[in-house]
Image (cartoon, rainbow, N blue to C red; front, side, top):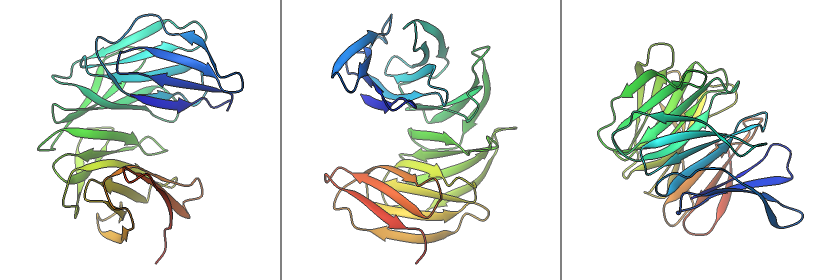
Length: 239
């Protein structure tokens, strides 16, 4: 299941365990569109493209799917993973997507053709999330093998392993300049990393159970983490 705010700030998209996707008018509090066709199983993540015209979903049916927001029609289905697709996200210009799967791999796809551009192989267990850097040159993956990993999108090669968590890494993302990364884990910790050398810069303790999502602020001066303990915490990125 998942939820995503549209870039216009007026609409919200929701994805359910029943495989249905709906778009809601926030002010009116009512569904204004149901996307045509369903994943055959639960949806694990949902995301808007930057222009707000398309939605991307990841499902237990081993696919990611692309949708037209205006018409509700399915535009493409990305098939190739051997197990559930747990997360999917766009690059900045919306021409590529990256998917994370329980099969232990991530894949970079061409949106126009639906073809796999790179398969990112290296995690020992499920890949729980995957995101592009803003410039699109790198991908960061979060793994159930207690690591996050950094990849070059041009050739699909891994160039750093971020090791230090003691439980699965649930979320990972880049700062806007791409020089730092943040990770959150089921060990309740949040960590800040130097992307250029893979070194841990900060270890942030405050959550009392697993961390579900971590993100940088647009300026990179703070980190926001949300946990299963029911709290969200803002952290400075300097000691």
